[in-house]
Length: 141
Image (cartoon, rainbow, N blue to C red):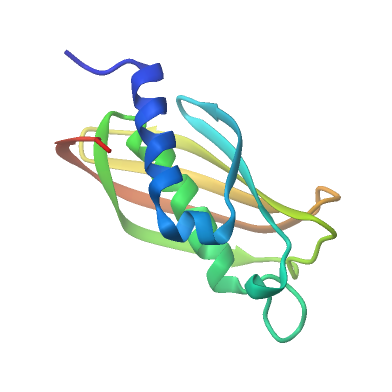
């Protein structure tokens, strides 16, 4: 029998909490639905580049983690096949950088997730798209 939304949400929340890299980034989940997640990371010095904005690699990782979390809400372990980001503005902020990931296609083998990253004042700084392979393996902690 397929896992329920609440069961998948519990597993994926635990996965995020146990993941050292997610903890290093300081990911804090704000909203979590079956096909959507919204989270934030703190605007802190270790995540900044030499120009005072959040490093592009940090932003890509943040987006990939959230997109992967939404993809795995299918109940199956998913792995990134392809990801692309459009860096529209420098990610500068006072306190937090926010990311939203929304599943836009959920097939038997491929899942597509769109992401948006914004700063404190709501300015869109990045958007992107990630494609995931949906494996036959159930998600687990």
